[in-house]
Image 1: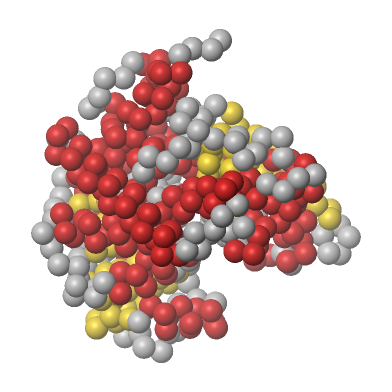
Image 2 (image 1 turned 45 degrees about the horizontal axis):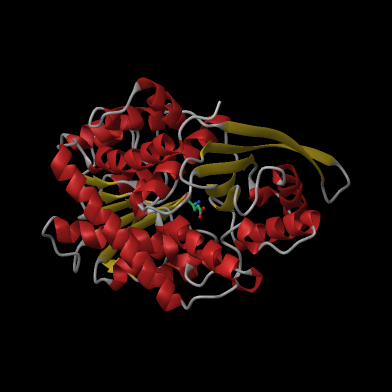
Length: 418
Ligand code: GLU
């Protein structure tokens, strides 16, 4: 795994690449490549033993031209200012490509949550929520889950905000549990958009997804649900991994059984049905029909890309390929379908959650899934049309052309405010 690529520089390069295929001035381009503001804060939180620990945390509000800033909050030791800036920028273009009325934001705390008790995590989360309070709001900036956060953390943030504001405003945050105003289908939504993108990609390329061999790197919320839903399409999930390593079975796994094993033991490795175990890098270079990177950014750098043998890559993680990897794969027979479409299901169902919260009216899971499918398939059609029209070197650049045009249109139509 590459340690070198700076995700913020990767984002800027992706925007520059797309600008070659569109008419956008340097001033606007600069705006598209930098966040509007970044909050950096230090949370002093009491631990269970009475000591006080300080945690650095960030929230980047990248661009609000199309609507409120929107994006998750991650808890990870590798969180940094530049990572949060990049992730917030990717949210802008993700929301634009699926055409939902949001800008982009992202937050994070530098922490390994495994090292802390639930009570400590609650105090840390509420402390961050207190710092975020002046920034967030149902029409301003709406956080959501990301790596190592989920319904529990979202419920705490909602409660902290509502208590401090003396109101009920569930739409201030999405990805909550259903009893706290969460949407049906939200937990599965990221993996569902990965499945839909894979299904549409195989159809577009004239290939059969039924019987296709699939490797999934990462078995968190995005990866395991993607594996489950792609398996339901009739594909063979021959290899999956998590941070402990990868497992392999030529005839394919039942993803639900692997998930049960991970829930019991803490990792996918050691799964009794596996024929082989190897590293994450070995998984990424397997000769499979479909590869789904669903872990963290920079999983595939330029060197590793030389060894990638998959015919189709569908990105469930944010930023799993470096720009060098993109260049290598653009010159190969591998098609890469980018993160900003393939994992956009999460934020799309967050949008549905926000709409439901504002109307105080809950949709059925069937309605959520139908609307998500419509949005992802429309966005996919739009993407391949732009890919063919522009002659862009890969699907990522075409995706950015679609997304950037929408952001620029919104910006230019608003006029200037000094
Ligand atoms: N963290 C998810 C993402 O990267 C979801 C964001 C959201 O729902 O706002 O897209």
